[in-house]
Amino acid sequence: MANEITVDPSQVNFFDPEISECPYGAYKTLRESAPVWQDPNTGMFIVTRYEDVQTVLKDTKRFRNGKNKSKIDKRSRMLREIYKEKGWVPAPTLAGRDDPEHKEMRKLFAHAFRPQKIKEMDPFVDDLAHRLIDDFIDAGVCDWVREFAIPLPLIVIGHQVGVPEADIWKIKEWTDAWVQRLGMMQTEEEAIWSTEMEIEAQHYFQPIFDRLRKTPDGSLLSDLVNTEIPEWGRTLTDEELHAEMMADTFVGGSETSTNAISAGVMLLIQQPDQWQLLKNDPNKYLPILVEEILRLEGPVQGLFREASEDVTLQGILIPKGSVVNVRYASANLDEDMFDTPELLDLERTNARKHLAFGFGTHYCMGAPLARREILLSFKALIERVDEMWFVEGANDFTHHQNFCLRALRELHIGFERSCTHSV
Image (cartoon, rainbow, N blue to C red; front, side, top):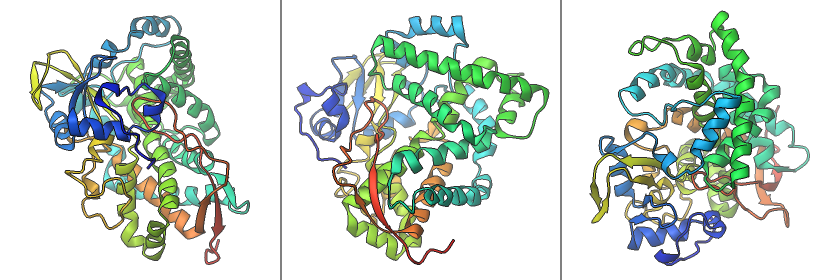
């Protein structure tokens, strides 16, 4: 984790590039002096303490989903017209719905992420991890983000929905564009570009939907296209399917894993004593490593809720209709919850209590798959590599500018390959 930049509460601006790059000082300031803080730039209320974040996430009656984000995204109406003209207007996603719709729609995805289904994928993920490492192991150096952390989860989710592996980099361009707009730090021109990229993706997926309606093939995507939601008396519409493809399937199914796998290598190089612990006893420490990476470098920094009524939290009135931003990443560094929270600690006993996947009703359905992807990635790395280091002068350790997500741009590492691994 980068060094904290201490800021005064009045100077906190998460849209400032310097604070966006390293928000930890701002998080600490707000936890200590303004745990429920109204952002003067957007008017939304930012919640930063662990206990308060958990309170908001549990209380789906007073803190609901819905169209909250559109209230702080002034361009929504303009972008909606572009969707209508050139593609399909995305419907609310699974993550953006409340019960009963959320519960009813969630059943569609449940079978893909049940424990037995995830376990069945282990050989595919493990083989893929080694295949990706094979491509750069002889060179002794790689850009870990580009050559491993990005392709692995994209190929896995593509495999689940029947998308050719050759298309993953095209899909990555579309998910990057979607993520950039989610991040709320674009110019108007950039937001239009992101929307048009998503529409390009829609035209890629629409013929697949049409084909699967005529000829179901048993894939996850085929099930999503053809399974009727009993309470609705219908299958998903094209608008709902397009929303799910980008948000909950490809972005939700890849970004968390990509960003955690990237950050994990950075953390282990920064703390070589933890790398040695891991090498000495991977069975013991790999599961803890997964949780510590997710806690320390939360791929999802925070998401949104809307106050359905006037609510007082930490003595602060949050008026009905206000946008509430729950900062998972700040909660995961709360000193009242975690000892020495800034350190990667493979002996930590409560690491799994982090909120990186949310909490309660909207707990991330893809969490079991993400955990397996991260664990099997580092299992393969341990088996193939003895030592790692940063390539001198090749890294600036910067992240993509984004209000909601945290993602390393690149990570150039050198390594000494293991002499004990046999092909």
